[in-house]
Image 1 (cartoon, rainbow, N blue to C red):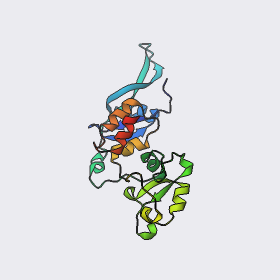
Image 2 (image 1 turned 90 degrees about the horizontal axis):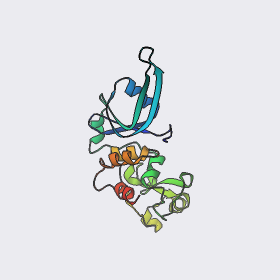
Image 3 (image 1 turned 60 degrees about the horizontal axis):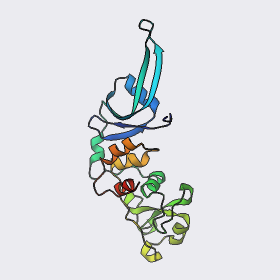
Image 4 (image 1 turned 60 degrees about the vertical axis):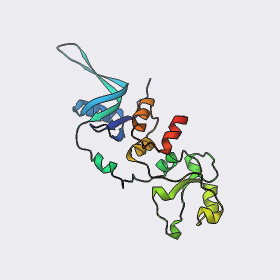
Length: 198
């Protein structure tokens, strides 16, 4: 049985991932006729009222992936210079909750955002200049570059594409949603290796 907290992946008509929605938002989109087609498995079956004439109860199937009508400005998210919003949650997800200095795996409360080139030295707060670091490593590195601190960076930071960002924003991503999203990842995506390793 799927939890009512399970997210539904919403796409545009061309199949470009747009966002995660809950089952109530998905049900509203179905009811308003905004769902063009569905993919993936049936997540939830909602039962409505009983028709007085036919004595039939209305039923609505909510699928794991729904494509919706309308303009969603998805083209802007395909531009070469597009960068999704940066947050610690998505940063930690990008780096798989690993400290990219010591290699340890930590919970979010023991992690921090480290600027590879420190802000004090002209570094900027962007995807390509930030990595996940445990509090200990971040404190040790302080306002130095990894080279000056004698620390090795275990992976190169990267800016996720929009599809990768949608994946990073997801919670309890189902196998069919994962397959759909990963088909939109660049072939060189570091996230593809992680998904394949499972």
